[in-house]
Image 1 (tube, rainbow, N blue to C red):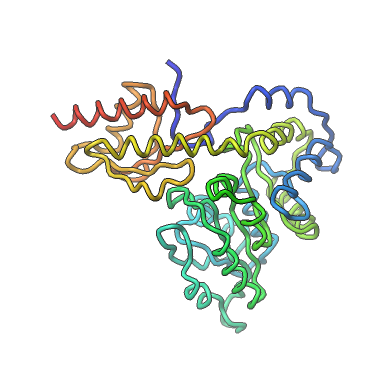
Image 2 (cartoon, rainbow, N blue to C red):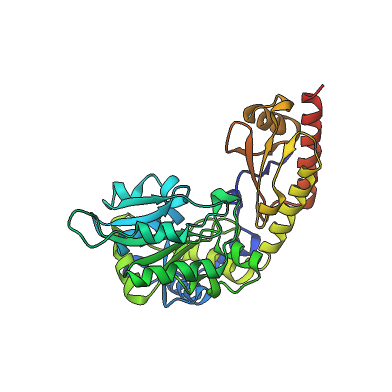
Length: 350
């Protein structure tokens, strides 16, 4: 039986069209700036998000860190959400490698700062304080059910940033999921930030890579940061070719992943012993929990899913889970997940 993997959209593998494009890609040495396929991908990426230039990097974490190191210097600070990926899940790179101090703010149920908190967090020009140089945002907001944040929030943050000469970077790992969910052109979400990164290797199905986009001068400096971080690649056109297919063919179909996530969420909502907030299911992520009366722990539930149906799932708490749909998850897989969950809950309540 084939594995049905709901742990993340990072487990998606390249489509046949991507494999064919990779095999046929013209290449050069990208560190010398000579790979034509990388040039094509970077130009398309910049156009997709309405920025001047782009840089191909191996991972989303490197894209974010290269942006942070370019915007801020050692001893300066960056305002970031307490549950943001750049703060919680990137190994403290801004502090470890950049000497940049995170100024951590709480976020609401969707992943937004209080604008009052944001204003108050920007430190005055005083030799006792770090200089607040950067605001780090995220969309969709991964730790808040992958919720898509609207453009008016980014416009409000940008207005505050401009008043204080502070830059804004958007971790848009799943930017296109947010845009598709909101039925907006990505430009409407990215026009209010100085830089944005997005991943090719999640819902867009490419095997490797992310893009960092911004102004041409910013990208020139970010290229240096990429080199420092060990991200200079040689014949990277083999990878960039899959990224071109991702951007040309895979964005609009993200709506299918969202529909599968909704199907899963609504099915789970009808199973006694499962708690879920349907209002938060807007993209391809479904967060839910098994209630204490089921006598199930996360480890036990995950083990039973694998044993019964070879379904893989990730835990985010003692009884809490995150299921992520992607190109390789079908409606039949969703139904199998629901059938298995019903059986596990029923057996646990006997």
